[in-house]
Image (tube, rainbow, N blue to C red; front, side, top):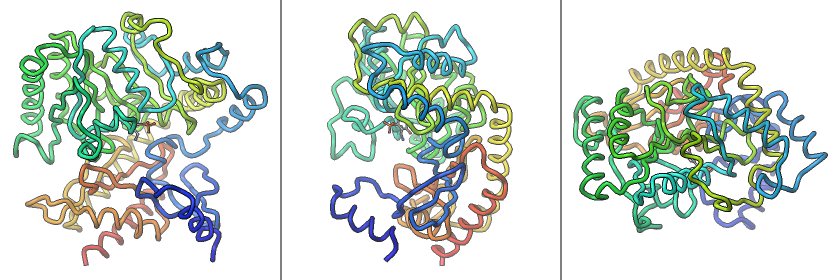
Length: 434
Ligand code: PMP
């Protein structure tokens, strides 16, 4: 029995049932795009811990920054005293925003979910309105509140908290309003949102929270002009637009923020994952006027914004800023290359219903039949958790029906890695189609 088997056997005995359908590997080490297990097997990481290892695992400078800080200060947070690391991280994160009139205040929390919850609290404080609106299929975390928004779990953990409205997201491949061009689908979604604002919430809405591109929901890219249209309506009613860039942020889509590609400036942005290098942090970023609605003692977190975490954020963002041009151009170039090669797979494999994405945030939706679009859920899971894994590539599933393969390598990915991952997909698709 290998070390992997031994550890898995004991984990199965001691852990609560694993609450996520994970790869059955035991990881010991990871560097750039490579992940190594306890038996010395190497894997190419095309899931990057759901986009956290955005700059590759353990980018230069990160471990040193953490180690140097750990030798001086571990316990402590950003609430009961201040640290220089907190200041440095705040400056680093704000440096990622192109418009400093819109984005000049930041507050750190420990996770994406907590960041979203803080953004909602700020919107309530600022607008003094009640309802929160979010969009169907969006994913904002697994706390009791954000988890209740998670469509796939709503039945088990519902009902929704009072004051929550779900509006349709324009998912072009499966438009909730029927078969129509993407722009029409986006227009219909905005009209529905305005209807809800007027006739369900009676204008008492504080914010609409959405991902620019739905990640866990299946790498769903809305029509190009959707957010522009949406923002115009929200502004009419004084409703804040909150962008959850937890997954799409810091270069994943080929620009630092996905919102830059949708010609819109959200009022509040929540970032996490890639920005942290792997330590627990999220950043809620907004402008002074909105931030000033929060009052003393509104927030606390025992571990939040500790010097250790803040040092990691600064090291990660510094590395990103230092190599920004090459990282972004690589994300664009490799994204286009991957799309081209994946379209060749589309021509070859009827199981592929659609390939879509921006930059290196790509989804491959699998269907049993291209006409009926019946989701190929079992096949998707089989490819990600068994067949690709056996061939040394890590992919995870996404989508409401679990039928979308996420293609999310680090921004440092090379063409040879993409070729290998696509060859593995090609073989695995061929097997399940047989
Ligand atoms: N928002 C988005 C878009 C996410 O992808 C995730 C995590 N997958 C979260 C929020 C929640 O982040 P966390 O798991 O750190 O709470």
